[in-house]
Length: 131
Image (cartoon, rainbow, N blue to C red; front, side, top):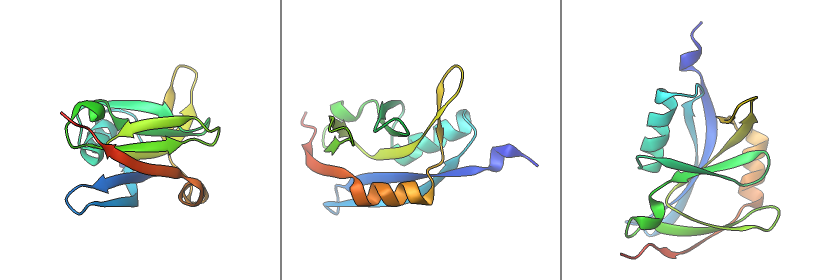
């Protein structure tokens, strides 16, 4: 059995500029850390590089590393459970923090964790990046 075909579920929140409406969905990405996973994340976030920010100890937010400099990109204000206010631009990918001896990897969010996020996520679109 090959582990490279395994997928994990993550939660995506974004804003469709053409339709002028927010969206949220559950997405599947490769579970194996490496080029396959990176390629899918870059496609989902429409980016070439990423930044990772902690939402809390268990959940990470992955976002484009160029979001704040690309004109027209929506800017979100996210209030974390400990009341930290984050301003992040572009589509947001929520994944589990998986702590290893030498790094923190992205892991699958359970259906219960996604349900919790949907019910408790404090997020607002506050504008767009201007050139």
